[in-house]
Length: 512
Image (cartoon, rainbow, N blue to C red; front, top):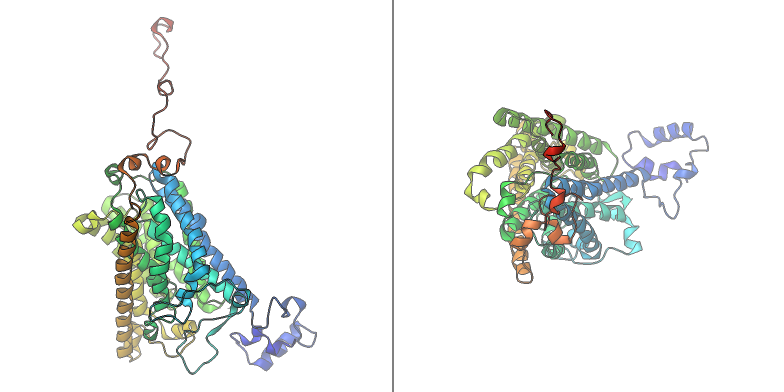
């Protein structure tokens, strides 16, 4: 097959075809014919770009690793020892449960067609013909270009990538409920919430829903994933109720070193989280990855500095919280803002959520009433909303055009002012607020209804006696083979006695 007809030439060409062909002829002397490793075949059709396809699979796997083992380790280490197994298991169960829901009906509800204005038609995504076909997002509104709906990857790549997004959303939500939710209620909650809540957010913001015409900027899920998980987690925490009073007063992490390991999976995995959104290994991907890490590092350092100034100590847990808020804040704008803007977003994401968590939360009776175990509302809802609004402010027109592959997208408000397009810039900010309001209201209402429905079948919160015990009561298993809090019975008395030498055996003048 001659190279001019191959997608490696057609995809983002940087040189005129004849010049490009001449250069390739110098590299491949066989009359411009591709080497065997690049030739199309039944498993690699002409439209498939192996570079894009390989990167997307890698990015999807990195997002999956954020959940398993990333959040499994983080949750299992960040909670009190007696809740380590239960917390880690909630994350592991959710990951498996979401995958089955996703391929059986939820993916089509999120990205399919034939449904209503807020939801796609439920259908399975398991057929070979569908999964091995070329991915078409079918959401582009630019009528001047009929080819930009298609990408150079298979649909199976996108199904798996978006599954990893859906799974981590539910697992992030679980951070608000650790240390008291009935595991059997959690088993019911996960598929119900993914079906009734997550799919609606994805369909309206990213799919063919009614918000599509407003072109809300959400590069990789600031609203769809983080705002929804923070709001839904806080809402569910209200309905489930608080932890045991002793746990609320004293809830130290059982292993800070392992917690840092889980946080490392989360940080590095975000390379795939934001780097995979362009669905190609291109320049926007590179910019998004760099911006992600710049914003995160800045946010961590700002949060750490505030802890040192106010509390006179450098908190490891605080640094992890600052890392998370930076990752969340940059997500809706990672590939469509400049790096200087990413750094500003990091400064704000390290300070505003710090204030809401460390100051406002302690002063507000409303926040004190709801037991949000890991502060997911602050690290995800507040940071996600902040990122969505800042993306509407800093979004750069040429980057928007490259990412969305359309010439119709409105500029960020800042560039609207500089470029004499104030009206469109202001309108974009208004649409960013509209998207945030819809996601917030929908998650509050639907999460509440789900919790109320489940409570009619099984209690949401564990019994008070079981709350005193923890993992052993919930699963009959414990994280560590050591005696400590949460064990039903203390060890035999002889193991707690310090042996003493009888006085008549002691040498005079020697203390034993």
